[in-house]
Image 1: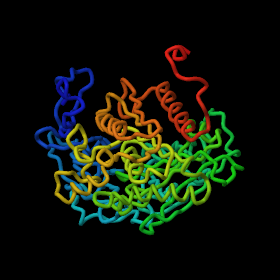
Image 2 (image 1 turned 180 degrees about the vertical axis):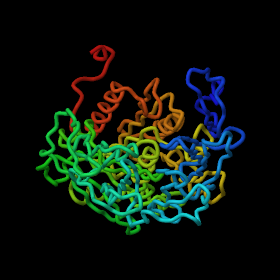
Image 3 (image 1 turned 120 degrees about the vertical axis):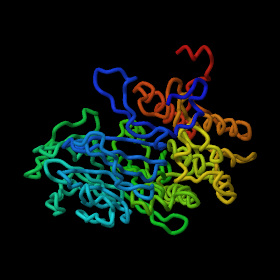
Image 4 (image 1 turned 90 degrees about the horizontal axis):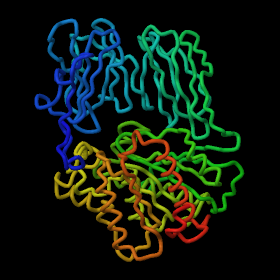
Length: 507
């Protein structure tokens, strides 16, 4: 329901609803299908299978795990049938054929598998493996009577074509190490379209012939960029507890490893989110200035499946910060940069990552850029969608032990007087109802109140904007310009042409 006036950034959002709407009828006549008081859930989605035979509903209470329900549409007012209840695993239906149903799940398979069963035998004990779990994380799509398995191997993708009975037919040749999207379509299609990108490969669309396995260029990016001038390589470094963590470092060919390079270290480390290579025009601007751009694949993400995710959650959350700190130390030890030339960046859960890192190791970097961050770990669950993050973070209400753990790293509660913090630009949107802007307001206020050094402690508040999705291009450009300029200026690479006054503001 729409929050009442004045509570848009505080009201709990925990009663999602799925409605059935008939075209050309008023919304007031929509029928509640699932959710609301009858089935209180925080995240609900529904879709009809391609053959039109079933309605499938996914329901969840947090960002990890979902229930799955199915309803036959050829029987009027048929009851929903539970495929699986509880939130210990994640699954979705990928194909149906009559009574036969194919499901992608990580139940008893943290890296994912494809199983099949029938409508009458939904219980997991009746599931039969079609594509068994492997040591690599699986994502699956279907088209043209085939399954397309995308495996994540050390944070880059490989794709394989399978028959419907699970026989591997071919590996699909990709332009190089990178990330793919697509590999899905209608069951009767003869071809499909997929995208490929990497840190130095602009997003490109290919057309794929399902029968022959041949790919051809369909549309390439018009960005003015020469990938031959740049290098992107993967390294593995050691975290505090001995865990090997991958990181991809991108830079202009020919740079000197003498510690002089402005370096941006980016991370996320949460909610099973995987950071795979992607092309960013904004990042190319940074590289053109001689900058190094590094992305660390921290625990808490999904790069190595659910075990990797769980290793950065709850009372193991410190592992994520340790991984990020170790990434910065690696970049310095290998002479890509120095502490005086290092910036750290991340948004949302990544904003928490940046703020926790700068409060724990303020000596490690010159610049910190926490964006739309979760920064008050004792009260985050009191607002809007925050309670849905409890499976990753835990809450201060869970136990005295959990309270103390959260208090120990909560950025808002760990700003100290007399500490030389890095130059900091907190960013948020005044209409952010995902991570409410109060997090950023309070953290910036705490920094400004307790820091007495010469470095700037700023907050940049975008008006008429939210958590980031849907932000118009002009606002994205303005924010990126501020991000790069703030970083380079506080690394000593540029100086302002003249003092900022009301007179110069007119220009």
